[in-house]
Length: 395
Ligand SMILES: Cc1cc2nc3c(=O)[nH]c(=O)nc-3n(C[C@H](O)[C@H](O)[C@H](O)COP(=O)(O)O)c2cc1C
Image 1 (cartoon, helix red, strand yellow):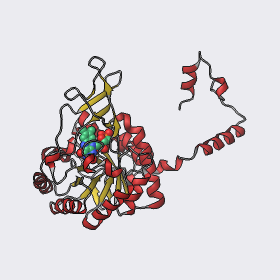
Image 2 (cartoon, helix red, strand yellow):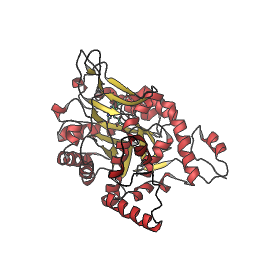
Image 3 (cartoon, protein in one colour):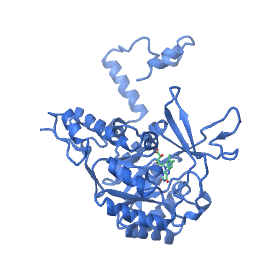
Image 4 (cartoon, helix red, strand yellow):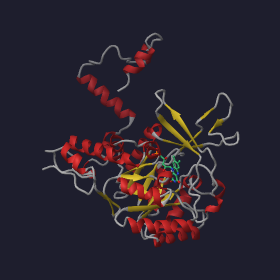
């Protein structure tokens, strides 16, 4: 009899829906951390204090990564407004810019709240996101103090794209594989818990900093953080947005629109892990809003899937339909566990030259049966048929 295992409140509903299918579970163990499902709150506003972290656990999220903390929050000063949205023509939010910094709350308060969260939810996974200056003693101190509060793991924020570059924090560090390797080495010596290095996408080859972190002993990689962007310019005021006292500064881009870029980078990191660091984990991030989105990231090698902007758009309860949808996908393909399909689609990437070879072979085999309406060579593009021809070349 097919059943979803685990304590989830949506299990009964889902069991009813897929009666007769094999046993399936979303429960997973990653780096020794036992998660009821792979959906993880990404570092940001949805994990910014103990109240919202509690809300996330109650809604059924698999784990929570708290908002990034540093030892000295007095230097963290946020502005308002700090978000700007990109809307599709139907009004849907598809892109989100933020110029928000890491947590502006004192580290001492966070120490208390980490402890309170673990007291209240002892079986749930709480991950501290940490960011520090380029000093060994600072990294060792923040790791040891968080560890003493009972957090289950760490995410090292090497990827915050704005603010604090003068202190060489965040992306300023993550863009430099040598520094990143050194810092991960410090953390490796201090951490008694697993730690994931969170990558910036604002770099040409994301494999380089990922390799450096893994070489130094990082348990896993998280990717991606936000892409540096300018959301737009207001055509009445001629000011870039978000506009603060008439001025702006480039921010970080997230939400649905970044998903294809995130999928590509996750694919590249997963391929690196497969070849050079088998067994290390990957937490995939970028524009996830549904179970189908999550399935794609897992097919490209993700162990877990993080969500930040989605929660800001839809609220914490979104995790329930995401779990249902991911289970429906698994039932359709008769997958019983996430491991059954993790990385399965990586096998279908190859070089462009190999695509040409495969297509030529297929055409020869089928005696070139391709529709005459599809452009075969660049000579055939016509001004009148241009839009139709472009569309015919898509999947
Ligand atoms: C408003 C906002 C604040 C964020 N703050 C943090 C942060 O403090 N630390 C961090 O590592 N990432 C931070 N992020 C990045 C997210 O964790 C995530 O990597 C990124 O937004 C892409 O995922 P998404 O499309 O699901 O939002 C923030 C993102 C947003 C939108």
